Image (cartoon, rainbow, N blue to C red):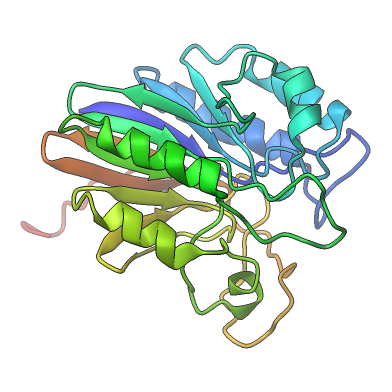
Length: 271
């Protein structure tokens, strides 16, 4: 089965900054190296937004250097912490729509990868982290879905368009999520992949199955009451691995850095 590596919420900082005591670049490099070591045959790596923590040129420069040795195509996306102009100054060849949104299509024999730009702005009001798909981006998505020609659409957004019960993050989800999900539901084979919440979660909304991945850096907290969206915890970094099967997609989440040895259970005949 064809493989796709998916990494979300990198949050690269300046060299002298950390996040809850963690260096996001070091953590990303751990995840990058593990994914490339175990899956060098992957067809692409999708970076699902929040590439830089403050959207600064120096942060994108550090990310560009960290991607220099990645041997497969890298598909970048933008999240609420990113800034389009600074990103494009560092990654001028990133795919753009006619309106300047960072969106892309990659086709395989039986699948179509569609990556969306859910960054709301410019302008970028202080403290605003909600996502947006404007009419131009929705029209582009509709054309991408229509043009799939029988391929299974795998749609990627940074912001989820649904509630997860984690109230702090649900307050800054994708605006207009119902219309987005209704559009995806028109193609029943569509699978949605999201980031933003820094947790591994799966489910379905309005008939659309979805999968969310953890971050290489700090992880979110399963708190169903606190409205603080900045709650984080130091748990193992992770990446997603998609296996494109003839009739759909299989999504794995792989933790990195546990140094866990693999053993065979010889004490039981069956599992």
